[in-house]
Image (tube, rainbow, N blue to C red; front, side, top):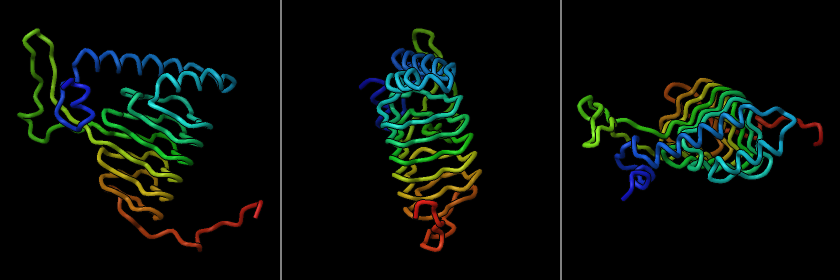
Length: 203
């Protein structure tokens, strides 16, 4: 099994693996190219995202800058928007549904490091390559979720359809559908109800 396969299976892997290093370098190259574009270069931005990401639907808007570990492990549905400084550490799959909004400074953090110091130490391969062991857990954000500013979503988390994650939250466990959740660690505050509906101009 390759180190990439181990990584995507949430097993311990060597991040110094040649294939993984090349993938990360390519993701950083493409992110730099995207971050160098202007608002008038919509087609160029789309072409870069098509090359960078595992998949992305139509109407994708990402304010600059964006950063990805691999890019290819991120799958984004249609009508997605992220404000400034989106960071996606997609060592495991990050799957984002349609009509999802992210405020500024949102981080998807799939990587996990061993808890015990002796398991976390830097090692040296027979060829002299320095490495450490880590693993990663997937993240799923279902349709119509709003993630407010400065939220961190940890690996292994699913956020249910239509929920709202309040500013500054650290999401360490699953959040059900149709709720407002916030805090460190993030917890459910209440269900969303018809009382939360706003009168829209086209109603």
